[in-house]
Image 1 (cartoon, rainbow, N blue to C red):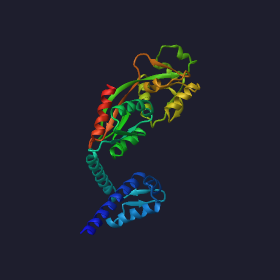
Image 2: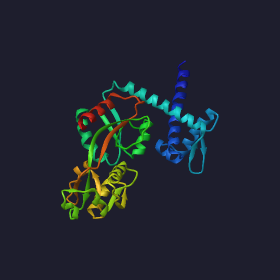
Image 3: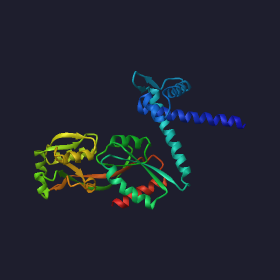
Image 4: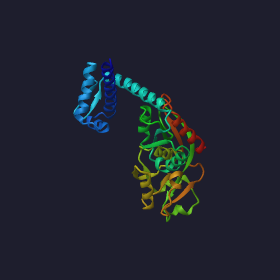
Length: 304
Protein backbone atom coordinates (compact mmCIF):
# COMPACT_ATOMS: atom_id res chain seq x y z
CA UNK A 1 0.00 0.00 0.00
CA UNK A 2 2.78 2.42 0.92
CA UNK A 3 4.62 1.69 -2.33
CA UNK A 4 1.54 2.43 -4.42
CA UNK A 5 1.01 5.71 -2.53
CA UNK A 6 4.64 6.76 -3.14
CA UNK A 7 4.25 6.09 -6.86
CA UNK A 8 1.15 8.28 -7.02
CA UNK A 9 2.94 11.08 -5.13
CA UNK A 10 5.96 10.97 -7.41
CA UNK A 11 3.72 10.94 -10.46
CA UNK A 12 1.80 14.03 -9.25
CA UNK A 13 5.02 15.83 -8.39
CA UNK A 14 6.42 15.13 -11.83
CA UNK A 15 3.29 16.53 -13.48
CA UNK A 16 3.53 19.71 -11.41
CA UNK A 17 7.18 20.17 -12.39
CA UNK A 18 6.25 19.64 -16.03
CA UNK A 19 3.60 22.35 -15.79
CA UNK A 20 6.15 24.77 -14.30
CA UNK A 21 8.55 23.98 -17.12
CA UNK A 22 5.79 24.32 -19.71
CA UNK A 23 4.77 27.77 -18.38
CA UNK A 24 8.39 28.97 -18.36
CA UNK A 25 8.92 27.83 -21.94
CA UNK A 26 5.65 29.45 -23.02
CA UNK A 27 6.73 32.73 -21.41
CA UNK A 28 10.23 32.80 -22.92
CA UNK A 29 9.34 31.25 -26.27
CA UNK A 30 12.82 29.73 -26.48
CA UNK A 31 14.26 26.43 -25.18
CA UNK A 32 17.67 27.94 -24.39
CA UNK A 33 16.31 30.84 -22.31
CA UNK A 34 13.77 28.63 -20.57
CA UNK A 35 16.41 26.03 -19.69
CA UNK A 36 18.63 28.76 -18.21
CA UNK A 37 15.78 30.06 -16.04
CA UNK A 38 14.97 26.54 -14.87
CA UNK A 39 18.64 25.58 -14.34
CA UNK A 40 18.18 22.60 -16.67
CA UNK A 41 20.00 21.42 -19.72
CA UNK A 42 18.20 22.15 -22.97
CA UNK A 43 17.95 18.44 -23.77
CA UNK A 44 16.39 17.69 -20.35
CA UNK A 45 13.79 20.40 -20.87
CA UNK A 46 13.08 19.14 -24.37
CA UNK A 47 12.54 15.60 -23.09
CA UNK A 48 10.23 16.82 -20.33
CA UNK A 49 8.06 18.81 -22.76
CA UNK A 50 7.99 15.83 -25.12
CA UNK A 51 6.75 13.59 -22.28
CA UNK A 52 4.06 16.14 -21.49
CA UNK A 53 2.94 16.18 -25.12
CA UNK A 54 3.00 12.38 -25.26
CA UNK A 55 0.78 12.28 -22.17
CA UNK A 56 -1.68 14.77 -23.71
CA UNK A 57 -1.51 13.11 -27.10
CA UNK A 58 -1.05 16.33 -29.07
CA UNK A 59 1.69 18.98 -29.42
CA UNK A 60 1.41 22.06 -27.22
CA UNK A 61 4.19 23.92 -29.05
CA UNK A 62 4.91 24.58 -32.70
CA UNK A 63 8.69 24.31 -33.11
CA UNK A 64 10.32 26.99 -35.26
CA UNK A 65 14.05 27.53 -35.99
CA UNK A 66 14.63 30.09 -33.22
CA UNK A 67 11.46 29.99 -31.14
CA UNK A 68 8.50 27.92 -30.05
CA UNK A 69 4.90 29.11 -30.38
CA UNK A 70 1.92 27.78 -28.50
CA UNK A 71 -0.59 25.72 -30.45
CA UNK A 72 -4.30 26.31 -29.81
CA UNK A 73 -4.23 23.40 -27.38
CA UNK A 74 -1.13 24.88 -25.76
CA UNK A 75 -2.92 28.18 -25.16
CA UNK A 76 -5.71 26.34 -23.32
CA UNK A 77 -3.16 24.39 -21.28
CA UNK A 78 -1.24 27.59 -20.42
CA UNK A 79 -4.33 29.20 -18.90
CA UNK A 80 -5.09 26.09 -16.85
CA UNK A 81 -1.47 25.51 -15.86
CA UNK A 82 -1.17 29.03 -14.47
CA UNK A 83 -4.37 28.56 -12.46
CA UNK A 84 -3.09 25.26 -11.04
CA UNK A 85 0.35 26.63 -10.14
CA UNK A 86 -1.16 29.76 -8.59
CA UNK A 87 -3.54 27.62 -6.52
CA UNK A 88 -0.69 25.42 -5.30
CA UNK A 89 1.48 28.43 -4.45
CA UNK A 90 -1.34 30.24 -2.67
CA UNK A 91 -2.17 27.10 -0.70
CA UNK A 92 1.43 26.68 0.41
CA UNK A 93 1.56 30.36 1.41
CA UNK A 94 -1.60 29.92 3.51
CA UNK A 95 -0.21 26.84 5.23
CA UNK A 96 3.11 28.53 5.98
CA UNK A 97 1.57 31.63 7.57
CA UNK A 98 1.90 30.05 10.97
CA UNK A 99 5.67 30.38 10.57
CA UNK A 100 7.42 33.34 12.13
CA UNK A 101 9.06 34.47 8.90
CA UNK A 102 7.54 35.66 5.66
CA UNK A 103 8.73 36.66 2.21
CA UNK A 104 7.43 39.31 -0.20
CA UNK A 105 8.38 39.70 -3.85
CA UNK A 106 8.23 43.43 -4.55
CA UNK A 107 8.58 44.85 -8.04
CA UNK A 108 9.44 48.47 -8.85
CA UNK A 109 10.24 50.54 -11.92
CA UNK A 110 13.85 51.82 -12.35
CA UNK A 111 12.89 55.47 -11.75
CA UNK A 112 11.53 54.55 -8.32
CA UNK A 113 13.42 51.50 -7.01
CA UNK A 114 16.84 53.04 -6.18
CA UNK A 115 15.45 56.31 -4.86
CA UNK A 116 12.31 55.45 -2.91
CA UNK A 117 12.69 51.86 -1.74
CA UNK A 118 15.96 51.83 0.25
CA UNK A 119 14.72 54.26 2.90
CA UNK A 120 11.20 52.86 3.00
CA UNK A 121 12.28 49.22 3.25
CA UNK A 122 14.91 50.03 5.85
CA UNK A 123 12.24 51.54 8.10
CA UNK A 124 9.84 48.68 7.33
CA UNK A 125 12.43 46.05 8.27
CA UNK A 126 12.97 47.72 11.63
CA UNK A 127 9.31 47.32 12.55
CA UNK A 128 8.93 43.97 10.73
CA UNK A 129 12.24 42.11 11.12
CA UNK A 130 10.55 38.78 10.39
CA UNK A 131 9.59 39.77 6.82
CA UNK A 132 12.06 39.47 3.96
CA UNK A 133 11.36 41.78 0.99
CA UNK A 134 12.96 40.77 -2.30
CA UNK A 135 13.06 43.71 -4.72
CA UNK A 136 12.89 43.07 -8.46
CA UNK A 137 13.41 46.06 -10.78
CA UNK A 138 11.65 46.02 -14.15
CA UNK A 139 9.73 48.12 -16.66
CA UNK A 140 6.06 48.94 -16.17
CA UNK A 141 4.99 46.59 -18.96
CA UNK A 142 6.91 43.66 -17.48
CA UNK A 143 5.73 44.37 -13.94
CA UNK A 144 2.13 44.25 -15.12
CA UNK A 145 2.73 40.87 -16.76
CA UNK A 146 4.60 39.47 -13.77
CA UNK A 147 1.98 40.69 -11.33
CA UNK A 148 -0.75 39.12 -13.46
CA UNK A 149 1.15 35.83 -13.57
CA UNK A 150 1.82 35.81 -9.84
CA UNK A 151 5.59 36.17 -10.16
CA UNK A 152 5.58 39.22 -7.86
CA UNK A 153 3.26 40.00 -4.95
CA UNK A 154 3.23 43.79 -5.09
CA UNK A 155 4.61 46.48 -7.41
CA UNK A 156 5.48 50.14 -6.98
CA UNK A 157 5.17 52.17 -10.17
CA UNK A 158 3.52 55.31 -11.53
CA UNK A 159 0.50 56.26 -13.56
CA UNK A 160 -0.36 55.97 -16.39
CA UNK A 161 -0.70 52.19 -16.66
CA UNK A 162 -3.03 49.83 -18.50
CA UNK A 163 -3.49 46.83 -16.23
CA UNK A 164 -6.63 44.76 -16.65
CA UNK A 165 -7.73 42.68 -13.66
CA UNK A 166 -5.09 44.26 -11.40
CA UNK A 167 -5.80 46.61 -8.50
CA UNK A 168 -3.97 49.92 -8.09
CA UNK A 169 -3.90 52.44 -5.27
CA UNK A 170 -2.30 55.88 -5.30
CA UNK A 171 0.34 56.46 -2.62
CA UNK A 172 1.47 60.04 -3.27
CA UNK A 173 2.16 62.67 -5.92
CA UNK A 174 5.64 64.02 -6.47
CA UNK A 175 6.81 67.10 -8.34
CA UNK A 176 9.09 66.88 -11.35
CA UNK A 177 11.92 69.44 -11.50
CA UNK A 178 13.95 71.00 -14.27
CA UNK A 179 17.63 70.10 -13.91
CA UNK A 180 20.41 72.13 -15.51
CA UNK A 181 24.18 72.54 -15.07
CA UNK A 182 25.08 75.18 -12.41
CA UNK A 183 26.59 77.51 -15.03
CA UNK A 184 23.45 77.34 -17.21
CA UNK A 185 21.57 80.62 -17.67
CA UNK A 186 18.36 79.05 -16.31
CA UNK A 187 20.13 78.23 -13.03
CA UNK A 188 19.91 81.91 -12.08
CA UNK A 189 16.10 81.77 -12.04
CA UNK A 190 14.14 80.64 -8.98
CA UNK A 191 11.36 79.29 -11.19
CA UNK A 192 11.28 78.52 -14.90
CA UNK A 193 8.47 78.86 -17.44
CA UNK A 194 7.73 75.63 -19.29
CA UNK A 195 7.94 77.40 -22.65
CA UNK A 196 11.67 78.04 -22.33
CA UNK A 197 12.48 74.31 -22.20
CA UNK A 198 12.09 73.91 -25.96
CA UNK A 199 14.85 76.47 -26.50
CA UNK A 200 17.49 74.03 -25.19
CA UNK A 201 18.63 70.51 -26.07
CA UNK A 202 16.72 68.01 -23.93
CA UNK A 203 17.97 64.76 -22.39
CA UNK A 204 15.20 62.28 -21.66
CA UNK A 205 14.48 58.65 -20.87
CA UNK A 206 13.42 56.30 -23.63
CA UNK A 207 9.78 55.35 -24.15
CA UNK A 208 10.04 52.19 -22.02
CA UNK A 209 9.82 54.39 -18.92
CA UNK A 210 6.46 55.76 -17.79
CA UNK A 211 8.30 58.85 -16.52
CA UNK A 212 8.94 59.73 -20.17
CA UNK A 213 5.17 59.76 -20.72
CA UNK A 214 4.65 61.95 -17.63
CA UNK A 215 7.12 64.46 -19.05
CA UNK A 216 5.69 64.26 -22.57
CA UNK A 217 2.16 64.77 -21.21
CA UNK A 218 3.24 67.90 -19.33
CA UNK A 219 4.97 69.28 -22.42
CA UNK A 220 1.90 68.62 -24.58
CA UNK A 221 -0.36 70.37 -22.06
CA UNK A 222 1.98 73.36 -22.11
CA UNK A 223 2.21 73.30 -25.93
CA UNK A 224 5.94 72.70 -25.59
CA UNK A 225 7.95 70.52 -27.96
CA UNK A 226 11.48 70.03 -26.55
CA UNK A 227 14.17 68.84 -28.95
CA UNK A 228 15.62 65.61 -27.56
CA UNK A 229 19.28 65.01 -28.20
CA UNK A 230 19.68 61.93 -26.02
CA UNK A 231 17.31 59.07 -25.10
CA UNK A 232 18.64 57.16 -22.12
CA UNK A 233 17.61 54.05 -20.20
CA UNK A 234 18.86 55.11 -16.74
CA UNK A 235 17.87 58.19 -14.74
CA UNK A 236 21.37 58.49 -13.25
CA UNK A 237 22.77 58.72 -16.80
CA UNK A 238 20.34 61.54 -17.59
CA UNK A 239 21.63 63.44 -14.56
CA UNK A 240 25.25 62.86 -15.56
CA UNK A 241 24.67 64.04 -19.13
CA UNK A 242 23.04 67.21 -17.80
CA UNK A 243 26.09 67.81 -15.60
CA UNK A 244 28.26 67.39 -18.70
CA UNK A 245 26.16 70.09 -20.45
CA UNK A 246 24.54 67.81 -23.04
CA UNK A 247 21.22 69.51 -22.36
CA UNK A 248 18.53 70.06 -19.73
CA UNK A 249 16.05 67.54 -18.37
CA UNK A 250 13.16 66.90 -15.99
CA UNK A 251 13.79 64.78 -12.90
CA UNK A 252 11.44 63.49 -10.15
CA UNK A 253 11.73 64.88 -6.62
CA UNK A 254 12.94 61.57 -5.13
CA UNK A 255 15.97 61.58 -7.44
CA UNK A 256 16.63 65.25 -6.76
CA UNK A 257 16.49 64.71 -3.00
CA UNK A 258 19.23 62.08 -3.16
CA UNK A 259 21.48 64.06 -5.48
CA UNK A 260 24.26 65.50 -3.33
CA UNK A 261 26.34 66.69 -6.28
CA UNK A 262 27.01 70.39 -6.90
CA UNK A 263 27.26 69.67 -10.64
CA UNK A 264 23.50 70.02 -11.14
CA UNK A 265 20.88 72.60 -10.15
CA UNK A 266 17.14 71.86 -9.80
CA UNK A 267 14.40 74.40 -10.40
CA UNK A 268 10.60 74.30 -10.10
CA UNK A 269 8.39 75.28 -12.99
CA UNK A 270 6.17 78.32 -12.66
CA UNK A 271 2.42 77.90 -13.11
CA UNK A 272 1.25 74.31 -13.57
CA UNK A 273 3.97 72.04 -12.23
CA UNK A 274 4.67 68.66 -13.78
CA UNK A 275 4.16 65.71 -11.44
CA UNK A 276 3.64 61.98 -11.35
CA UNK A 277 1.52 59.76 -9.12
CA UNK A 278 3.29 56.88 -7.38
CA UNK A 279 1.06 53.83 -6.92
CA UNK A 280 1.11 50.29 -5.66
CA UNK A 281 -0.35 47.47 -7.73
CA UNK A 282 -1.35 43.90 -6.91
CA UNK A 283 -3.37 40.98 -8.23
CA UNK A 284 -6.68 40.77 -6.32
CA UNK A 285 -7.20 37.18 -7.50
CA UNK A 286 -4.13 35.93 -5.63
CA UNK A 287 -4.08 34.99 -1.96
CA UNK A 288 -2.80 37.94 0.05
CA UNK A 289 -0.65 36.85 2.98
CA UNK A 290 -0.51 38.77 6.26
CA UNK A 291 3.04 39.78 5.27
CA UNK A 292 1.80 41.49 2.08
CA UNK A 293 -1.03 43.12 4.03
CA UNK A 294 1.54 44.49 6.50
CA UNK A 295 3.66 46.04 3.74
CA UNK A 296 0.63 47.56 2.02
CA UNK A 297 -0.53 49.06 5.30
CA UNK A 298 2.95 50.43 5.96
CA UNK A 299 3.14 52.03 2.51
CA UNK A 300 -0.28 53.63 2.96
CA UNK A 301 0.55 55.13 6.33
CA UNK A 302 4.15 56.17 5.61
CA UNK A 303 3.32 57.82 2.28
CA UNK A 304 0.19 59.68 3.37
